[in-house]
Length: 268
Image 1 (cartoon, one colour):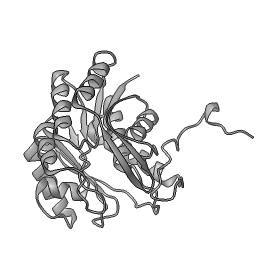
Image 2 (cartoon, helix red, strand yellow; image 1 turned 180 degrees about the horizontal axis):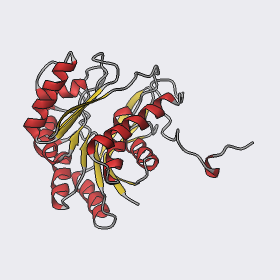
Image 3 (spheres, one colour; image 1 turned 90 degrees about the vertical axis):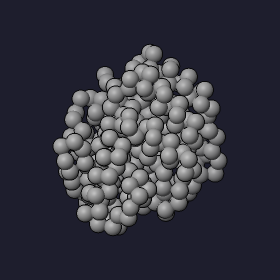
Image 4 (cartoon, helix red, strand yellow; image 1 turned 120 degrees about the vertical axis):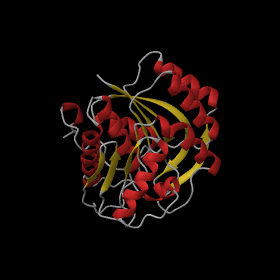
C-alpha cells in the first residue's frame, strides 16, 4: 500500500484539517499519516480556540514518520507561524520528500486573512519552491500573484505568475463567483481546465483540505498530476453531492460516499 502524510491542524469536528485529510486519503486508497501543527476547538459554526505545537515537537513528529513509514506523498495544509513553516521545509529537504502538495490556507472565503504577513512570506520562500503543485483558491492566488482575478483570463495570468515565480505547478481553484466550479491547472506542459458543475449545498467545510489530500493520494499511487487532479475533483464532487447534513453551520461532506462492504452496513 502506498502512503501519504498530512502536515496540518486538527479539526475537532472532523470536517477539515487532518481528520478530513485522513478520510480522503483512505478513500483514495493510501495509508494516511499525520504531523499535527495545531489543535483547534472547532465545529461547523467556527473556531473557538487554537493551540499551536512547538517547532521542536513538529520536527519530532516528522522524524518519527519519515524514519519508519516513508510517505510517498506529502500534503501541507494550514501552518500559521514562520517557525513552523521553516521547520517543515527543513525536514522535507533533509528527507528529500517527494510529491509535495501545498494547500496555502491563507485567506478565508469571507476575505479574512488567516495567517500573518510574515508567515505568508516564509511560506512562499520556503515551501512553494519545494511543492510539486500548489492549490490556491481565488483570494489566495490574488495574494500570491499580487493581482486581481475576475475572469478566466486573469486566472490564467495569475497562475502563470505563481508558476514562474515559485517554480511549481498551480491548480487554481475556480468558484468565488469567477466560474462554475472550473479549476485551472498550469504546469510545465501548459494550461488545462477541469470543468465542474456547482453543487447546491451549504455543507462545504473542508473542501480545500479534501481536494489537496486526494491529489496527494493519487500522486502517491503513481498517477500523473493531471490525472491525479481529475480523480480528486471527481471524488470531491461525489462527497459534496452525497448531501450529508450535520451541524448548525457549514457542515462537512460525506468523505465515505463510496464506502461499501459488510463493515459499512447499518443495523436492521
